[in-house]
Structure formats: structure tokens, C-alpha cells
Length: 270
Ligand SMILES: NC(=O)c1ccc[n+]([C@@H]2O[C@H](COP(=O)([O-])OP(=O)(O)OC[C@H]3O[C@@H](n4cnc5c(N)ncnc54)[C@H](OP(=O)(O)O)[C@@H]3O)[C@@H](O)[C@H]2O)c1
Image (tube, rainbow, N blue to C red; front, side, top):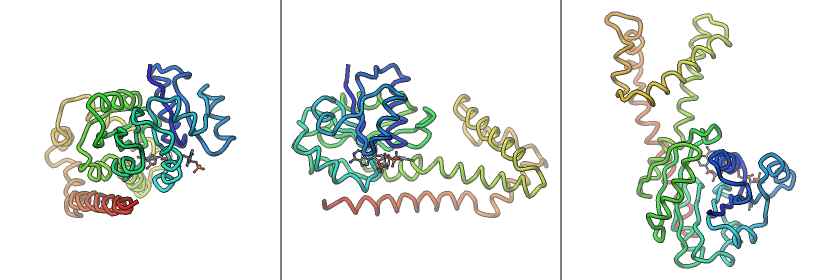
């Protein structure tokens, strides 16, 4: 059985630990590092997983999952560099950090798999895209994909597509939250009580998401099915098109991709 250490048990790290336990991993095969002792004690009490020092994690774990914020990566790499052998698999969940950064700073030949997850990991519905680094094999990718499938869906993409993935599924939940927020405002405009507007929109979002997931239909077909001739929906669609909502989404996601590229450049030389 693989021993897994999560380095940095914040929102994403905790969600992964919780998903791995629910997916049938034993607590004794898991460990985590955390800088605040109170937070560490809380997690150990809740999940029965041991909090360890980085040195311990490096010695005992087969897979090290890095889940600190990208700006906190330097001290983690400094700590890991003298401790890790090239037989440990390093998994980076850090947005924007290239596998080349880890490869430069860790022992020659260390396999690294980069992952872009998203926040629905906290409810076991993440979308994670995995990319192998230079020394990661298909078997490493398989191991990482299996781990992540405990907390949602997984696809493999070349690392060159990770900026697009970041813009699409990494930030994606925020676009849906924004849309839901705006639709609730519309309910208020039409005179509905806030609680009612919230319930109507959130359940409609859940229902629409389940239809997209469970039927094999293209979104266009599903939308056409609720757009009857001279009906109410087509009037709304005309306004959406008139206000350029489709073009706005294309431009917004392109802007997110550009920002991801820009942030990635900051890690090119160190
Ligand atoms: N949240 C998202 O939507 C999302 C989506 C995709 C990818 N990610 C990636 O997932 C990673 C984690 O994000 P998050 O939202 O879970 O952040 P978070 O809640 O801030 O979690 C990071 C945790 O790591 C701890 N930490 C920092 N340095 C450490 C060290 N040297 N040793 C041990 N623990 C350390 C932090 O402690 P402190 O509290 O002291 O800082 C914090 O508890 C990020 O790299 C992010 O890019 C997040």
C-alpha cells in the first residue's frame, strides 16, 4: 500500500485527506505537515491521521503531495531537497508552478506530476488535470490519477495546456458562482424574497449540472429543449446575445489564461 504525505493541510490538503479516507485508504498510510500546531491537532483528532515533520514525511512517504500556496513553495523545496531520493513521487497541486521548478531544485531524476484541481474537491467533486514532468512515467500518472479519483474526476493533459486548464476548470467554479449571484439579484429585481430566489437558482444550477453530467446530450440540445417558439426563454436568450455574454465569456477565460502564463513566468528562473 502506498504511503502518502500531504505537505500543507489547508483547504485543498484537508479535502484530499478526507477524500482518500473516504475512498478506503487507511489513516496509518496517510500523514500531513502543517505549520500551526492547533490546526494539526484538530486534523489529527478529526481524521486520525498523524501530523509529521517534513523530514519524517520525506523518509516515510512514497508519494509527497505539495499543497501549500505557490508563494510558500521555496522553504518547502529547500527542506525537501536534501531529504528526498529520486524514488519518491512528488505531486504538486500548486497553481502555476511548473514541474521544471521541482526538477531543478530536487534530486536529479525525481518524478514530478503537476495537478490543477479545483475547489469542489471539498465536496468530492473536483475536476483535476494531471501532467507528468520529465521524469514521471505512465505508471506515476496512473498512481496520481487513482489518488485524485477519490475526490472527483481526472483528465491527463500535456503540461503546455495547464494555463488553459487553470482558466477553464481551475477558475471555473468562480464563473458559475458569479452567474448564480447575478441570477439571484435578478430574482430580487423581480420582487422575490432573497431566500426564495436563492433556493430557485441554486436548485436550478444543481439540476442543470446533473442533466449535463447524466444525459449524453450536448448543452445546445438541452437549452433548445427549454426554448419554445415565441416563449419566455428565447426572449431572455436574445438579451444575453445582445449583451455579448458569449463573447464576454470567451474574453474572460482568455484573460484568465494570460494571467496564468504571466504568473508562471515568475517561477522560470528560481
Ligand atoms: N483553493 C483552490 O481553489 C485551488 C484550486 C486549485 C489549486 N489550488 C492550489 O492548492 C494549493 C493549496 O491551496 P489552499 O486553498 O488549500 O490554500 P491554504 O488553505 O492556504 O492551504 C495551504 C496550507 O499550507 C500550509 N503551509 C504553508 N507553508 C507550509 C509549510 N512550509 N509546511 C507546512 N504547511 C505549510 C498553510 O499554513 P498557513 O495557514 O500558515 O499559511 C496552509 O494551512 C495552492 O498551491 C493552490 O494553488 C487551490
